Every structure is written in structure tokens, then in C-alpha cells.
Image (cartoon, rainbow, N blue to C red; front, side, top):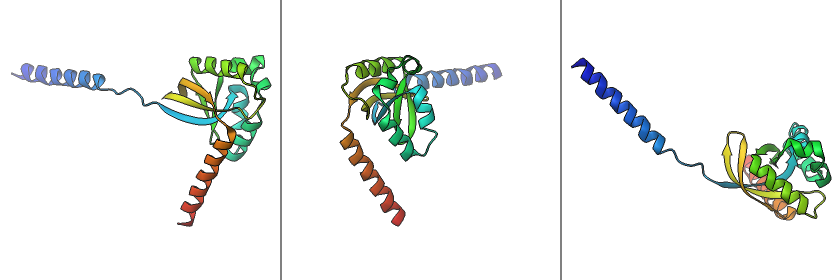
Length: 150
């Protein structure tokens, strides 16, 4: 009887675990806007205050990102002063975009994808007009100021 109870409990555990594995949802895709920067340069930028990191990222140049050592370090996004590394597919999309864009700096992009730990699994990457990003940033600053007043 004891063996039968243990066997029944074990079966329930295995079945519950299997069902939980099947129900694991795929990560939700989302979009982020920020500056496209190579990892080598981004490392130093994000050590600064978020506003300063964003200002440095805006000035980062296409020619720097395409230098061999910078390019080989991979690419990512600096958004709100934080660094988000791209996966290999994202690195390829970033490189292709950099090679075809006429922009020399202010490399603002919108990335859509999912997170896998600290890495963005990039599904798409497209240019964003910096003026729209600056408007969004001002709107966020205004919301923060209002929250401080309350």
C-alpha cells in the first residue's frame, strides 16, 4: 500500500511538471527606442549618469561603430542610459543598417524583439527620427516632475 501511494504521488508530480513545461509561454515581443552603439564604446558610456550616457550615445559616430575592433565587439542599444546587447541576428541587422544609413551620428533606432537574460533577441530594427525620441524623453521628464510634486 505504501509503495502504491508513493508511486501515485510520484506520478502526479511528473504529470504536473510535464504540464507546467508545456504551458510555458513564449516571451512577449516588445519595442525599445534608443541609440545604436557598439559594445566597446557603450561600456564606457553607461558608466555615466543616464542623461550623460544618452548625450554621449547621440554623438557616437557611424565611422566609429564600423571600425574593426568596435564592429567585432557587437552592437546594442543605449536607452534611458542603460545598455542592451543584441543577439547575433541583431548584430547582423545593426551592421547592415549602419552600412546603408547616411547618418553620421545620432543613430536612433527602434528595436523589436524579446529578452533572453541581458540580450535582446532582435526581430526587427528600424531608424527613428531623433526629434520624436526627444519629444518622448521630454514627456517622460514632465511625468517624473509631476510625480515629484505630488
